Amino acid sequence: MKSIIITGAGSGLGKELAIRYSRQGYHLLLIGRTFEKLKEVEEQIQAENGHADSFAVDISSPSEIQAFISQAAKQFTIYGLINNAGIGHFGPFEQMPHAEIEEMLHVNVLGTIYISQAVLPYLVEKNEGLVMNIISTAGLRGKINESGYAASKFAVRGFTESLQIEYGHTGIMIKAVYMGGMDTPFWDHNHFIKDKSRLRSPAEIADKILANIEKDAIIIESEK
Image (tube, rainbow, N blue to C red; front, side, top):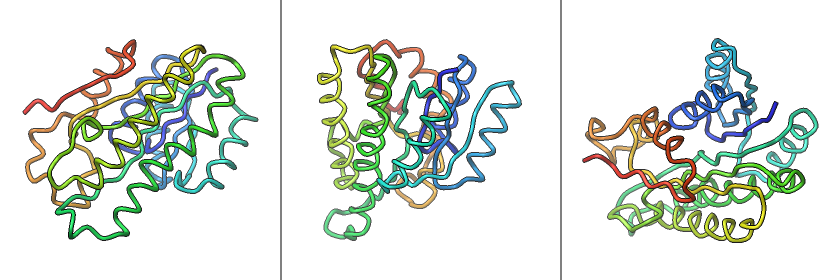
């Protein structure tokens, strides 16, 4: 059975994509920082007779990534990677703490790069697979009070577009997903979005991603 790794799989879009890919017959490797949340998703997948395993991994740590991928490759047939994990800090640029800027770059940019670099050799070996980067519309245009976040997402956009060219001659699919805000726990640690009723649900976004999976760039704008 082919395995797909999903980062940030314990909630939100990562969880919804995991459930949907499980229904398509894939084995899911759920990774994130909070093991308890991952196990809940794993159990939900197994309740539908799907297959999943959970691993606590900090994607901003190259050593943790390498240890996880090396072990996973011995146990499973790695077919895909969905880079969904991300963090956002928002507010006036001049008031943004350096620690918050660094955290966004470490998780959103370096985490995506590190794990992609660790996974791709296994996809190249079989000349097939999927790398999907969940980027956000903040990777398409700048937005007020999102300077640091947009910088991280523009970086991931450039990274993804470069991979699309570099692996264009192979059987590996490189996908970029740009979506507007979702009603997920992403917003729980800040007050940037005061009215979440205007946001799409993760389930709706996941359905739209799979419905447009043939596109290299999947753009899902906010409804309102």
